[in-house]
Length: 103
Image (cartoon, rainbow, N blue to C red; front, side, top):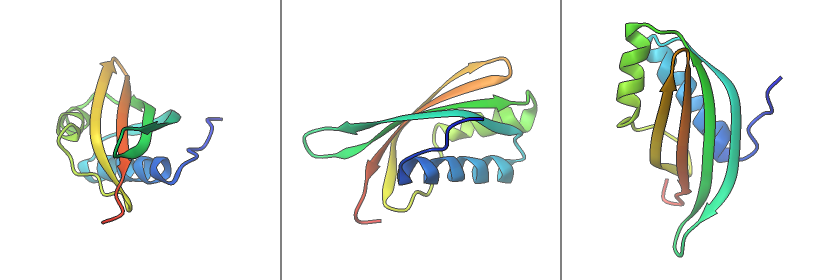
């Protein structure tokens, strides 16, 4: 059993990814998550690593391509950076979320 996300940002991010994938008809399963605190001189946030199991089909391919520019709604947080590393049947997402008190 995979460990549950710990921070609010992680919970919101995983939820937003699941909703986005489902809306696109993409077949994905969250297999593992990891997170660590991140901060710069003026921002605070979290670096996330999310491993996905994915079906190889057009809907999933299209969703992954669009994900790089997607606006994922996260109450109180913004996605500042998102990269993906794709392998057959698997995708690793690296995501930086930052706190946004204006949201």
